[in-house]
Length: 375
Ligand code: SF4
Image (cartoon, rainbow, N blue to C red; front, side):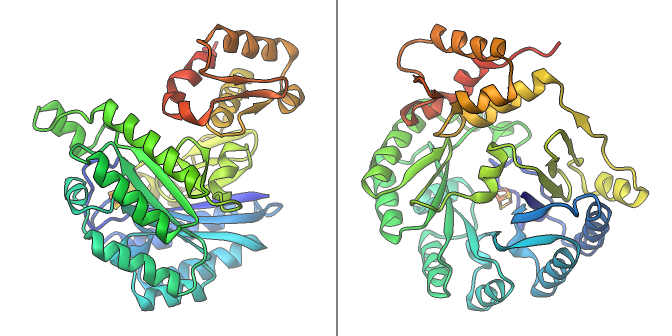
């Protein structure tokens, strides 16, 4: 069991809040695909024992790839890797790239899950985020995808946007829950380093996104989601029963994954490595065969990785699993740390420890308390 991630690093325009690696130049696309196939060819024999249960095309904007580019990429991947019969195949798509023809093609290629970069459903927020679609357009595209037969649709939402009132946020959620996407990824707007937004805030051209607003929006979302039958299964992800992202869930459960493309990360169960966030550097290393050094996780890193990934999920850490991987001393340390935290922050039972959904927005701070310093 494994996951395959392909990073497609192209966007029409850089969104001011986004720090994912992407470039706007179209001229690099041909070289990108050639390099990607080269990289895939290098890793295919090493991963030949794995059956891939998920394929995730993320970015960047994978929906920017032309029909020919996407078909050729899929043909190569399917020839090089072994996919399970019912593998989850996700394509991240921006609303403006969705039309009847692209939907038909994506479906015929076996893409069975669309992750649509909606971000907001009101024009003011969309304009603040400098997105290229209008609210009405985006909603039309959602319906078009549904009518084209996509029965597993995820949408990205951002909350805590300055100016996004409680009333508008409620309207957004009502409209969205009426549509019933199977999955929602919802993120608080944060100031990420190396973004246009960050530069503007530093130069005092924009205000820092207010925490209070994000907290209020999160609790409205949590409340509405429960009423409409959705469950948070991770800090930023909620879904209808049975529709969690298998691909992302595997990251949080320690399943091996291979990442191809610039900035992509990989983990084979014991070692992790990652590509440079630069087209030029990535192409150089692939063609020279100078692949990134594996980082073999020491016991502290394994411990920290386990904590970070498990505590982000609703399930949390289960003592039975912990005792299979770690020593009794480690588990005692976890319980000791949990007992030091203020009451109510964690749910500590005889089976394990988890962060209750109501405290998900505090998860980074809570997890930091458990992290061990590396020797
Ligand atoms: S948010 Fe999406 S479309 Fe915008 S720059 Fe980031 S990856 Fe590209």
